[in-house]
Image (cartoon, rainbow, N blue to C red; front, side, top):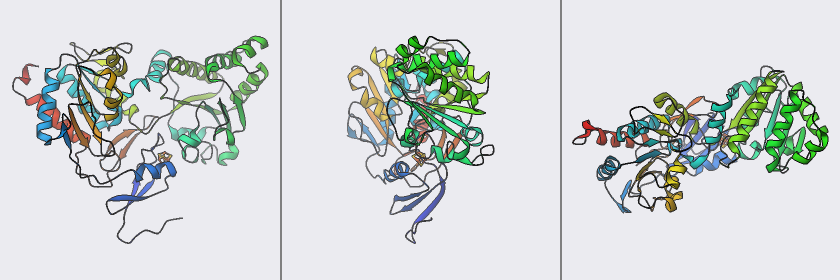
Length: 436
Ligand code: SF4
């Protein structure tokens, strides 16, 4: 039911919530007194995301911790990046596509590394897709076709509260006209989660048995005969239970495995590859896809922009004559861990905060959004407008669909794309820049 608002409140229909990877674009943001006072259609998590917005009048630039003019900050930042021997541009996943394109141009101009950021998150699914190939779909396809959803160690009811309502289990679709009644929800997880409480079929599995479980289901689907004792020993679950699950998967007309794209642990890449292998075997018998539940950042956009611009999805070395893909060497985490860069342009301020221990001897230029504190270990910090509330820009949903986010509040700070466009201009028009 529509809520009553003050007469002087402004309504912004079709606003985009960046509170989680659903990127709901049906939100009506209600603005009064320079704040978002309500977010109609949003879940509690989305309301909190909008409520965190504020009108900020604090300084927009700091040099060595002291407030400074933006022009001076740009000159200082340009000098740091221009004089670096081994610079890194990272944190692309925190900004819109328009800013990402400029960030790649900056990395190219200063002949450095460029990476999406995230300190390892999202890398695993990229590597797995490159190695195995992926069978994916849009969230709209899940909405209209999926009659079986397998939640694999994810809890969308808690982390993506409107996923089931908009795209998954509860949504009414063209080929699932009765919504929940036409769909089956299977959950495999370590604990009884909020999603598990709504499931039709729950299987509890220890986290360290994930790979054995995925290989087991794949073998059953492929028609191999397995030894029950070995299966029980390796997975902690009986072969009979795995057979039941495999039958459910094969009975689906259109199934989807929901998984986490953001895991950064050592096994994540192998696990992502195992999920894609299972989907491939299932697809020989019925229609099956894998769908990663993304976060509210723009990791997918960073992947797309890097692909368009350099031919590679992450960890690109632009120091040579042609772009080089170095997934084992040039990720943000590995470069910082090994101290192989002497200057970092981080579009994600928290990255600089997180890397204090590893940034000794490295100069940092950082962008922070208006809800973050200045970065203590950075030489130059620019405050930029918060994407989605104070600044507009294009964000890619985890299924690769671009969503245009619009500003609903004024901002004293420039948008990230405006700020780094000025920085690129400084780098291109500095004395002697044409020789670079
Ligand atoms: S489901 Fe996610 S994107 Fe949608 S309103 Fe809730 S937090 Fe925002």
